[in-house]
Image (cartoon, rainbow, N blue to C red; front, side, top):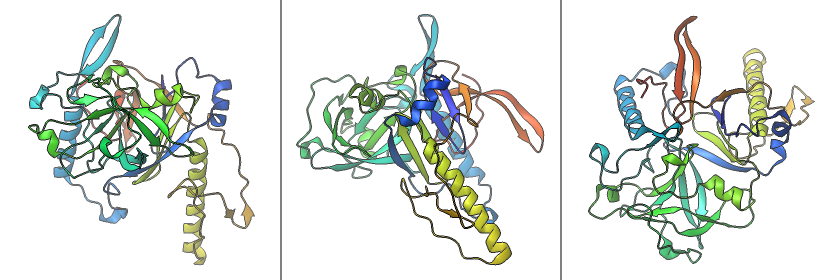
Length: 362
């Protein structure tokens, strides 16, 4: 497996047997599903750098939340390799049957999809520390709610691989597809005596690279799309464009989107320079792929010619290492004012963490 880090954040999963130049050049020609991402609660911080101040109380709270997420797993030997698995079901004082990964929380990146017939809108919360694909329906009215009773396309299941969770099948309305797609997922209903039933409803889209971090043993979204022939490549790409928008690509990469973002950045910088020197009015750009990605237009009177992104060049590929389960890579160093303060630090990629934390290696 390989991990791709580019721009703000881009992840790409490629089995080592596929990571060849000939295959990489063909990736953009394969079918790809692009999900528009949003950050619940809006931007992480104010967009005005002059008004940004350090909030150490908030930093401490985020540090506690991140450490709590990471402490839900443990390492163990399986055969001749080291893997990472979920701890006991009631670890840390949690209720019996509590799942890793909360849904509906502020500051989480999510995508919207329609489920069932008639459609019920669900928010898929991205989670890179687990591999479960589950929907949780609580007695609370908070979050995005799915109720199989109101779906005519729901196929019930009597299989309960995890407490209060069965594996039904229903139709999902995915982007760029004209027809709905039947997908299986874990549907979990916490006990009414549990505190979990007071929390938000929603959907967890696990993106961890190992099935060992699955509690419900539900089939992953990527494997189901591959099995139905809707995508051809076992690849996932995640790009956070700015503080509140992003693109999740399944079956390929968002290379064309990266190319567009680069062009957008150049155009915006040119506008700022023109405004400062000549007082010119900003140029309106036509949007593509949703908010935040713009189509190539005119640049200083000359038309910019669209081209296929040569995305292999300029992207940093890092091999996943450590106990199998997380997206863990080796960061060569961190420099502060020209001084290397951290060297060869193992790093776990987690889009739910807003800061660069350093925990003891466990």
